[in-house]
Amino acid sequence: LPILDENYTHVSEFFIVGFPSLQLEYFQVAAWFFFILYVTTLVGNMILVVMFALEHNLQKPMYIIMVSLALSDIGFSTVALPKLIARYWWNDGSIGFYTCHFQRHMIHYFGSLNSLILLTMAVDRYLAICFPLRLENISLLTVLCWAVAHIFPGITSISLSQMPFCGSNQIINAFCDSSSLVSLACGETRDLYNTTFSAAMVVLYVPLGFIVFSYIFIVISVSRMVNGQGRKKTFSTCATQGFIIAIYYVPRFFVYSAPYFPNLKMTPDNRIAMTLFYSLFPPLINPFVYCLRTKEIKEINCVIKSLQEGVDINSYILKIYVQIFCNISILCLI
Image (cartoon, rainbow, N blue to C red):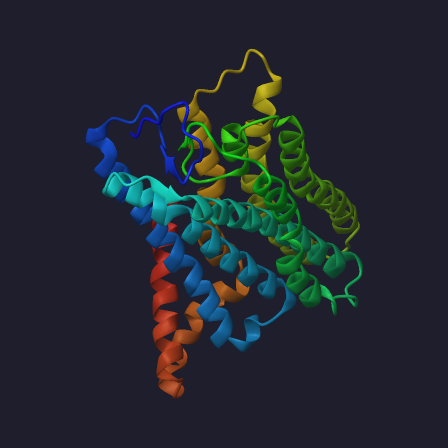
């Protein structure tokens, strides 16, 4: 790793260290692991996007939200993983000064976007169950998420742009993020740290509060249903979304709460591993969950038989890929 002189006046590039304790002989293993993870995430989510584009019966508010989440997952993985793969494949952790700031902004942008989309998902279920005739604005709300998600990362970007970087350039993380850059900034960083931490708390826990609130009302409304079959179907749909929300928020809560528990010690390697888990596991698992738990997507397999009735060849090929993907999902979860 590059060793910088303490009197170095200006940082022109950063160096992504990744896991500090990982030995050189395991770099190729790590590179292949993250490469396979990236390709699997990309293919799985792209299948959902293409399937949504070709299947008109999937073009409903709930699936618009799912596709937005899939696109966000593709974006996050594409911003975070290629440089991490290069770090371990070619031992190339160098990243330009402005490129690092751009990566930091996009990392937090897609993180904020995911949080807002999950909130929209909960609102969609709440309206569908409690106010079934008021779903017209869900698509507009989903579009607004893509714009609003820039606000808090933008505030942090403005604050960071005013800070000098004149010491170490080593980022002890898998990618550029706010906490890493704040720790490397020179001068008084307390206000900057408070700004970034407050922004993270607002983005994560304000939507979570509304999500919990909406699901409480959903459970109350569903429990009052007379139709047992309808109650079961509704709970099944909500359970799918609840699982997706849980794997997004629970690990984050653990990482952000760890500093406030003196007896809970996290090494840099453990912190990075947990960060990668809550950042990369949801994008990887979401397509599998949708494929196995969503009725309309599962039923696409049955439509393959319509080839005998003259179905379009592109649609048929897509359905074949979906069937293979779903079968792989089942095998992975057995």
